[in-house]
Image: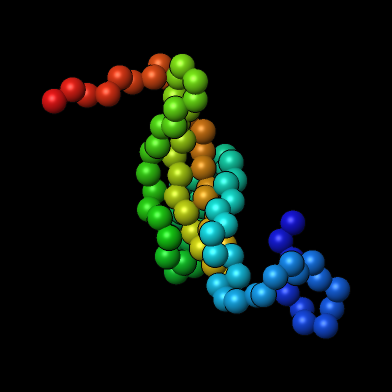
Length: 96
């Protein structure tokens, strides 16, 4: 849950608040079409914090892929929108 800070109202603050409030937070959301989210951001003039990319992450004996981009909300919370690409065999590192 994200909660708006309202001084004097009931809140769950466990330390001093300083802007940007979302510093260090990165929420990942699986979406049906990350391109559609990126297009909506572009139409609204919202700059991407991290551009669209395809990434593969090691998970045991295989890799899990996703198309992803990150946008920051006005409080500094980072929202990583991602679309799963499936799995593949783990790639061996290249040798020099």
